[in-house]
Length: 167
Image: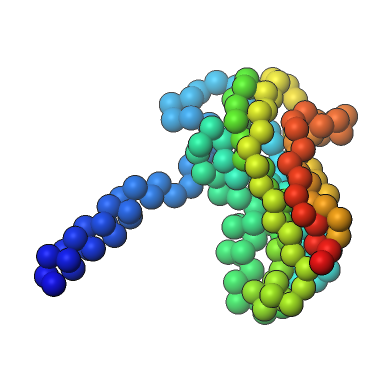
């Protein structure tokens, strides 16, 4: 019994040691130019926000808008105010994970109302001197997310799509 408990404790601690938390969008030691990629939120009601965000870059887990919003609104009851984040990326090819999600003020609201969560990895090659935003759409029919040029509004990545909020 003691050996099993020791093995379990070692496995749990190994899992904790492997957890790296959130990382910056730029690689360690990078000291060059960057381009801005802004997450986007849409306040649907006082208790519901649609979030379109970038959650990973080349495998690095980013602090995302949905997590920042959740942290900022803990203890506020049935009200939610979005906290939109942005990231600085080096110009050039990257693999990014995008997510579209409905975010309610309280878990009980998510259990009793329509929800959406779609995520996927796409190729993205930001260009110097450009600004980008994560855009998307959440409807009853479909949830979508992509990155677009902030000036022109043109999509610069593939669109990730999934089931909408309809039943």
